Length: 200
Picture (cartoon, rainbow, N blue to C red):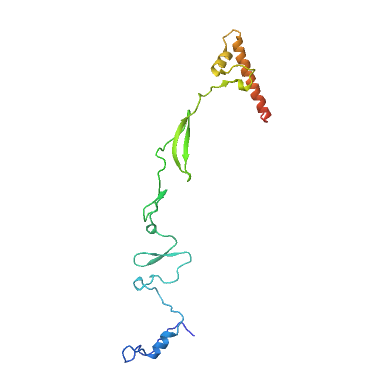
């Protein structure tokens, strides 16, 4: 039965005859009388130890300090390797840099333009720019596709001029036709809104 006490033989390891082991040492070396060895204190790093006495706490790691080791829950910055790819950093540093994928940073879009973007598979914006908004603000065209009594398509300028008319003068037939077309369009739009459950 083994014990925690090392029971070395009390005789010299070698007999007087060269290269001949003492039988007591041969017996002990093949079946030592101990099950474990408890060393009090800390074994220094020069002897292959950690320089720390005791069992490391759960969830910690041993970090070399140059002359010994210390318990830590995280690795120091100097222990991290360099990173490459979309996020890069130098070895021994945790300061990262995002790769540049868009060579035209800045603000996009305005009162007359909209912002345009190209996004890659990683969700990164690779191209950005602005596109003009087609058509002048406030313009419109009354077209026959809306079924405005078969009237010819007119521009907003012509309709506005017909509605304005001349002070104190009656609308001409052309002006009245334009107004009728506009009113017919409004009525059709109103009917479409009501049909879709929108109160007007």
